[in-house]
Length: 262
Image (cartoon, rainbow, N blue to C red; front, side, top):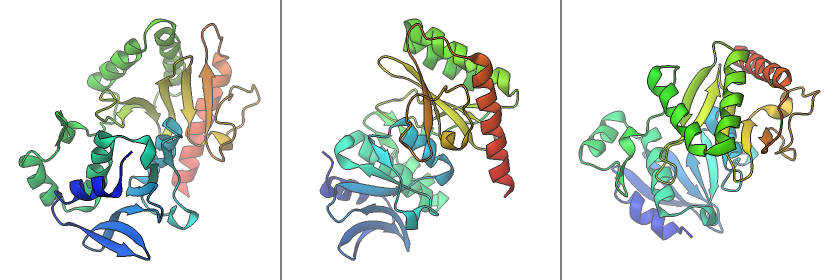
């Protein structure tokens, strides 16, 4: 389990980062900006993270990440359970949170000194790259191929339906980390539409705003207890209603567009 001392030791290596205790809570700042904050019992750690990607991150690993308190929802912030991460993941989270708040020149100097290398992995190359360029498509090809067997076949079919439903949808690979260097396939249009991943017994499509979508054909069969997220788990031998899936994609895109316009 990761502890405050583990984080303290690593944060001490980051330029301009310093520790503060506010109302019995340990926090780490750059200037006046907090980029890490522990709960009072030190079982969870809040960290800076793009709020437009927050729902998808939590949906991808709900046993690890959770929403911040209602008062913090307006901030770029996510909470992680320390018992659910290892040392490498902790260092990645801390580093990326620090990089969000530190001046770019400082981050560039740290990178030039080799500071983004964690456990043999160069985190400076971890940038999520949007767009349907050949390299992004090839990366997703490789990820899906790596699922193996029926899961690869199923994921490939789901991907084809997603792309057919919205010709303008953008394929991306997000959330690379040492424990999952290949990243996670994400489909976006005015925000994240859905996220794909392989489970032990299913291929899952997670819709971060799925609870706001109409699902008359009852495709959603997972994450039904979430206030915002819904997911489709496809097991071996399952047949997916392709027309219904396409309608969900179109509706999710429309919902993103409506929220962007408000």
